Amino acid sequence: MADTWIQGSFAFTCSNAEMALIEEAFQAAADLMDDCEPPDPTPEFLAIFPPTDPAHCWSGFRAIFSDPNFPSFGVDFEGGNSLEAPAVCTIYFFSDTDFQPDPLAQLIYRCCRETLTKAPIGFEWAVSCSRPRAGEFGGGWCAIFADRIEIESTGEALSRALSRGII
Image (cartoon, rainbow, N blue to C red):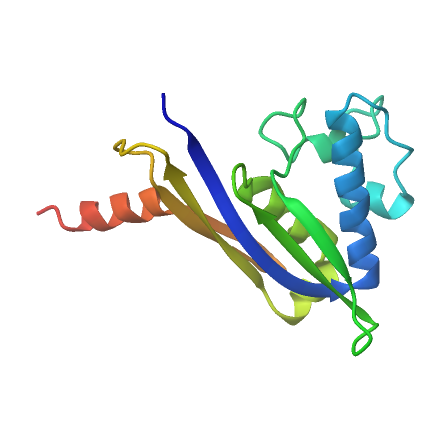
């Protein structure tokens, strides 16, 4: 038996309104994971996560996860303002075990529209294993822009590089 971990850690700054949306998303995810019905989403939240099923107000939010019944970002989350810059928040995402790059990228892309018009946000992650098993190590990167998300694993990059070497 071997254990595989997906690890990552990154920080960025955003507006207070964007931080509020991220906090709402994390609270909703925690409630949904605990089989509790979250409070109704705010109108701002519904605007960026419109329901995919009109009968379920959280369906649009659940849709960003590979398994909508398991809405986890796989990270711990901290954030807040500083006395030096009260108009912006610094957000930290970090995980030693189950970092989920795809839903995190979607969360940032949808919640941080104003910030992304000023500069992209990026992060990396690592995949490691408790035993030396082929194919169980790697990682990836993600760059989030105002108009798109670019995300790639090291396995995809390696495969592309190897295929260019074929004559």
